[in-house]
Image 1 (tube, each protein chain N blue to C red):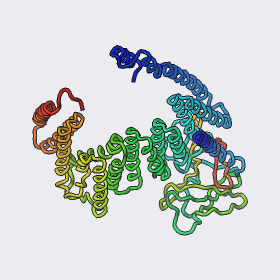
Image 2 (image 1 turned 180 degrees about the vertical axis):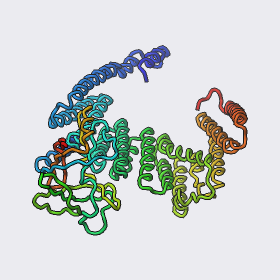
Image 3 (image 1 turned 90 degrees about the vertical axis):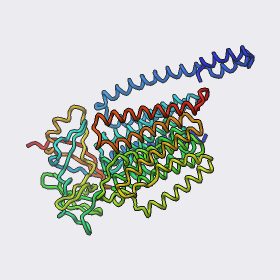
Image 4 (image 1 turned 60 degrees about the vertical axis):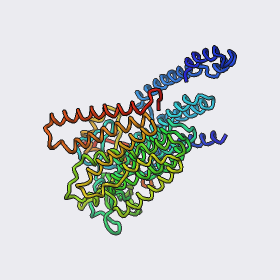
Length: 405
Length: 171
C-alpha cells in the first residue's frame, strides 16, 4: 500500500466523518516513508562501495599472496554476515538479507577460489553441495524466500556440475533438496516458494533419470507424487502453486503425445514406461489419496486435473495420439464448464485458451498431411477466429459485467 | 537468543569449511613428499579453457599389466592407489596400482586417484592434478608446452596431492 494512496483516501475518510483528523495523523505516522527512502540510498551506496572494493581486488588478485587471498575472503564473509545480522536485528530486514546474501555468495566464491589457489579438482560436487547446505541453514534462520531461491539455484548448479564432471548426481544434494527444504515450504506457506520447489524437484528428477539411465517412465511417478503432495498443503493458493508445475508437465506431455507419430512397430510401453503392473497400483493409490484430500478440503472440482494424469501411454501405439487429443479436449471443456458454473473469469479464460490449443492440435494432427498448406492455414485461422468469437460471446453472457472474479 | 547462537554457528562452520579446504592443501604441501612428474600430450587439442591449462601425465593412463589388486580391473568411480617410482633423474613414473593402499618403498610414492574410464588397453585415472590455473592471458605459451612440462607435486601421507610448481622440460 502506498503512502500517497493513504494520504488521498485518508482525507476523504476524515471528510466523511469515518475517522477524526487526529486518528488519521496517527495512522499516517505508522507508515512514514522516511525509512524506506533512506534504505534505498544505503543499498545503492553500499553496492557502489562493495563494487569498488571488488573490482580493485579482482584487478590485483594475481598479485595477492594465497594466504592474504584466503584472509580477504574470510573477512568479506564475516563482515557481510555480521552487518546483515545487525541490520535485520534493527528492523531493516530486506537490506539485512541483501547483505547476508552477498556473504553467502562470497562463501561459494571462496570455495571456487581456494580450488584455484591450489589447482584443486574435487572428486565430487561435495564442496558445492556444502554451499547449498549453508544456504538452506540461512533460509531457515531468516525465513527468507530470497535466500531460499538462491539455495535452489546453488543446488541446481551443483548438480549440473556433478553431472557434467562426474556423470552422476550428488546424493547428498538430492537429500538437501527433497528432505532439507520441504519443511521450509510447509512452514513458510508461500505459493512462490512451493511452485519453485516443485519446479526444482522436477528438474532434478529429470537430471537423475537421465544420468542413471533409468526408465523415463519413473518421471510420471514423480509427477503424480508431486501433484498429490500439493493436496496436503494448508492454503488453497499453496496447493495450486505446488500442483501447477507437475500439471503443466503432464499437459505438455499430453500435447506432445497427441502430435507425435507413434511408430506401431516399436514397443513403447516396454522401453519408455514403467511396467503397468507397478505403475497401475501406484497410480490408483495416489489418485485415491489425492481425491480423499480434495474432498476434505472441499475442492473436489480440481479432481478433473487427474484427467491429464491418466496413463494413456499404455494403449496400443495407434490409439495413443487420439486418446491424448480426447483428454486435451475433455480437460479444456471441463475447465470451461467449471468456469461458467463458478462464474470465474480466470477459469473461463484458462479453459478458452486450453480449448483453442486442443483444437489447433487436433486440426494439425488430422489435416496437415492432407490439405494444401495455404488452405490449411486459411481454414485453421477461420476455425480459431470463429471459435474464439463464440466462446467470448458465451463468456459475456455468463459473466455479469459488474462482477469481477 | 537461540537464533543468534544458530547464526554464529552457521557462520563459524562456513569459515571452518573454507579454512579446512585450504588447510588440507597447505598440510599436503608441508607434510607431503615432493615428486616430479612429466606431462603427456593432451587430447583433445583445445586444452586452454579460460584461465587454466589442462594437464595429463603418464600415470593418467595406466596399463592393465600394472594392476596388483585382487580380481577384475577397477570400474569407473573406484578409488585406486598408484605406486610411483623414481628413475635416476628423479622423475617419477607409475610402477603399480592397487585398490588398497600399498606401503611405499625407498624411492617410491603412493598417490590416490579415481578411475574415470576403463577399457581393455588402459585405465584412465584422475588425480585432481589435471588443472593448472594461470593468470589471465598468460595461458597461451604454457598451452603450447602442455605436453612437455615437469610438474612438481607434493603428495601427503594420506594420498592427497597438490601441485606446487610447473616448469618447462626443455628439449
